[in-house]
Length: 201
Image 1: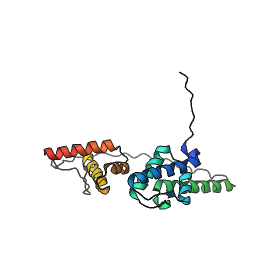
Image 2: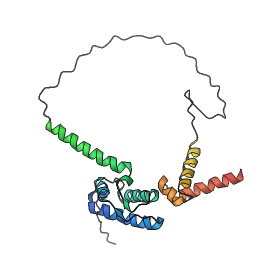
Image 3: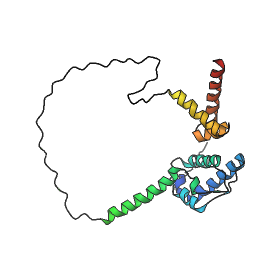
Image 4: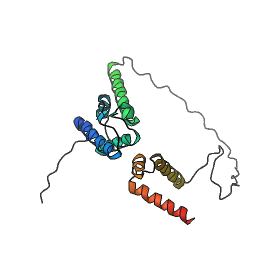
């Protein structure tokens, strides 16, 4: 069997495809969730084109999905874009300006010689025996430090976070999974396990 390799450039090198794909995902998810989104504003398109998209098409798809889940307007604008898309563009502009400034400055003075620092004489210290602290904490108590910060088990935090996302999406597990960046099957499985534990207790 003869296999022909096909080179697919990354999304950041396909400016036209970025907007086309974004509009495609916008139409699909708007219809799926009953939203009013129809177009992407020109200024938002410029931000999408400038973003490097390290996660390629999948990242673009997830971002559009999140926007549709959390908003309901006719046009996707700059205000809907996540911080990483906005910050990346600002960082790129700042880096370019800084690079131009460095190139325009010519250093005319030789660097100052490093000062010679004499080594300080070694000091000997006498080690004192230290008593090991004795813990009087109950074995069943949640660990905490002197500032009163309590360390909670990860499974408790995970359960609360997932449940908050489900409540936020009015019980829609699929939308909650998108917000949590988890697969719907994972959320369903955990939810069923917790419900089984609650009914057994």
